[in-house]
Length: 171
Figure 1 (cartoon, rainbow, N blue to C red):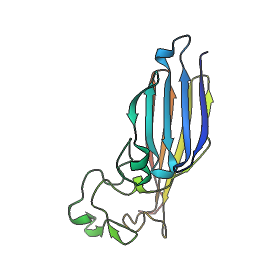
Figure 2 (cartoon, rainbow, N blue to C red; figure 1 turned 180 degrees about the horizontal axis):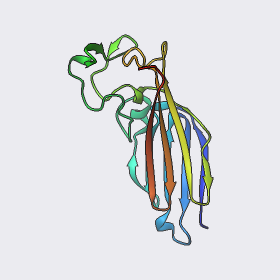
Figure 3 (cartoon, rainbow, N blue to C red; figure 1 turned 180 degrees about the vertical axis):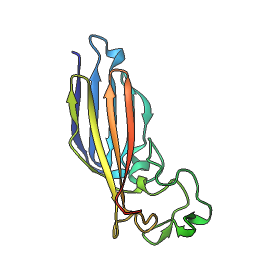
């Protein structure tokens, strides 16, 4: 059969997992599958072609908020010297839950909100977002009201991940 599929499965440890799939017309060697885990940083935890993983997260590492799969490195990829960054003449400590965060930002540590995935004739889609607002877990280390949205689109040619940032302040 030829077609796209999209659904949410529940993992006992990781919670909801979005599955996007494509079954190549009469050619299993072309099938594609993506697994996204919104509850653990909106991680693209698996991408496989013909059943072979190209990206394959270790579930135990993912559950421990360690780096595996495809973590979202936002707002600061790589390391942050002294856990501080400057913007417009002000220095901000990069912190979460009262602890310094030295590398790879804050978004990979958070549970993301999401919509149910959808499938149509031209692809399967999944969107998730994380709001950074006063009182939220990211705001301590990145005190700028905004929303980051990730959109995953699986087509017969592969997967596309799009990022969008929406400023929710007057600055």
